[in-house]
Image: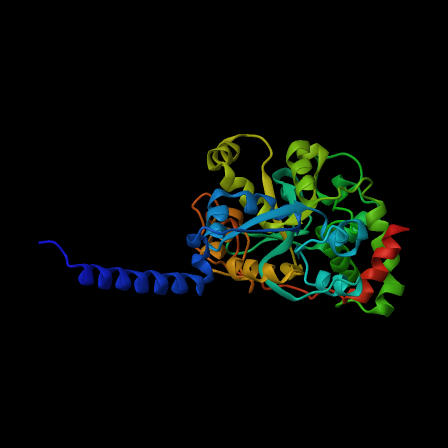
Length: 368
């Protein structure tokens, strides 16, 4: 039976009310913004260790549900908050790898509208099985009941400063003096944090200005011993994998880097584990420092990116695909079987970093 004109009009009115209500329901829920068809493109600088995360298709899709497209350009964490050549490009957000960078950005005139730690990963040392086997004999590396390797970093740094040969540390597969390499602390966060950790280890506690005067020279000597220092944590990790046992025996990096590399190709990892060659090993310095990843909002629109990144979906992807822990340093999903028991559930031996003013003074010392 045909509808009357009046009934048809009432039907259209009802549909309009439902449609309008649906529009406002979606509009008020940031995780559904993408359904409206509008996208906001946000541009800013990110630490290189987060490049693969933002390139992940599922991450791109999850951000799209928030109506966001993120254009993250890679820069060193220290550079992005200090270099006017970068800041003059008017980034809408900065995503460095240390909470201290928030204070340094503010000191450099960045008008911060908001900041929030959205990811965490501890600083670790990467080495190879033959090196670890030797260091276990000399007592510098121990294994926990859960099978995780802990490193006495202070003892290792003392050996480096003393010019100790690898063979004296139980590592007969390497020639010459023991060494460890990090990134450039004046450009990249992993080197920056390693410098702060080393200073605190030489000082016996979280370093103060007096400790810088007393032990800063030791940190300076450790970094001079490294030779060339990469400007990027990602590039150094690639050098480690490409250089192998002889090229890069020990480097400073982030826990998530090996996890991300394994999950990118689990079958490759299984082949490496089954092969007779040297295998990568992650060592947890005891104590270590946490690399917090704060999203610094410069443009108000980037507040939506903070909301997206702390959502359960993106937090789960950060952990299960890329090895980033949540804001509190804990797992935010079920670990893939490829990494299994590779990671400790929690990293409990953690030191705070020295304050921003002290770290800037240390950077000046290391740049000379």
